[in-house]
View 1 (cartoon, one colour):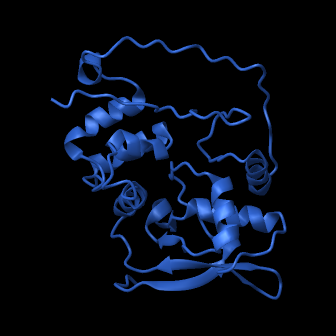
View 2: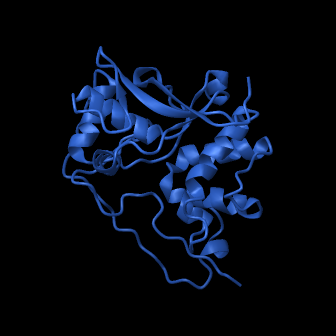
Length: 239
């Protein structure tokens, strides 16, 4: 039943389904330090229409991942998390004011993050730096096709944003009058494949490296490079 009021309920951490299409990047190390210092103050937000109607966490996936890693590593539960007699961690989750559809829920998920940068001198492409480019672009296309473009996105410039995410587009659109740019070839000294038995091991690896690893992560540098994002700078003619 859809409710117009918000309710916070504690649920078993192990049963918390994540948003399977979530392309958000997370700094799990920083999140872990924040939770350890301040406690678990920001409950994840549940949407029943996500994941094809199976439901899932639309906001707070990174925080949920950090708690799962802390629990797996036998760290003490942070303030704000209940611990049952059998050691089960129960996490506060916000329910209610549900989206009418999965696309509406996904649009909210993007807005919930992007609007933290609204009001500053940030472009849509700047906001896109929070997301994995391929997954973000695919989600934006899907939402646009269904008439659910997030309010944080300039609908009139969506094509330019998608071109920027793909690294394509006409040079005259974004590079008019700008100097030539040459990208130095970056070669790795060595690369190896690392395999994990389960998600807990994967998140433990991320914690030890102090890097954010998500389902969309394909490769990382160790130590982490200062600028490892696909999107570094964007220039445009404001005229």
